[in-house]
Length: 315
Image 1 (tube, helix red, strand yellow):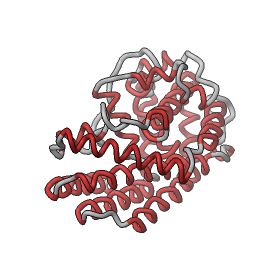
Image 2: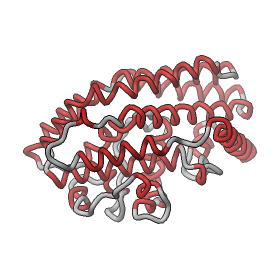
Image 3: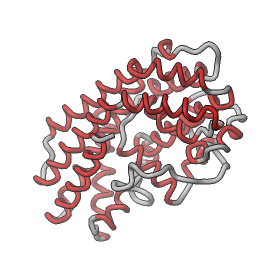
């Protein structure tokens, strides 16, 4: 979602691929009759059914990708974002919504950690130089908090499992898989990195929000692509195995009876991998923008970042 749209309603689309599981309500359980992909590799590898999600165009697709570039929520966060579109029958809506609110309330430390990073970046943008040590500490805190979220929400996830019917459990699994696939393509797929922020990305958004010129767009795109290439060379690629192990474990365990969220011992490494990587990528994106922006554009960008941080602290 755009910087000013992160808290707005979910996007909408048609029931044609896994994409629809993120954007439809009642139709989601119908789609859930299809068996979920067996592994995260099936979700994230081009050429599979789920890969068609990446080809979706338009505002709805752009908003979900943008959401995952600016929210570092991990796998339980993917669950939280998936619940509203499960399309449960009216007699169970209140129970499911209560569980969703409970999970959301327990997410407060994660939101606060995100806000701290956004404020660190905003201060750096305003000053013309991001404090690397402060940003690194804020990113580390996001990763640390993410490993606590599964323990904090295990009971609520067990309650959700108990309330959902089998087709709805399958639908939730598919939605989580789709959220991860979209997150991966938006943040960690090196093959998609060149020009990743151009069409449907934040560079194009900032053309309007900050008044970027074509020359600025070209320079930011080249700088960011080079920055991420350097990061891959220095730090390695995204630790896909950590994410895949947890996604596989969740995809197998959640539809089944009995289910106990505490048995998913893969959660900590997966959550830390996703949240830390996403936070690093976001900070590097804004860092590469700085030399190209005018003082007025930096002021506007800092205000947008602080606005988003403020929304997070109030969630």
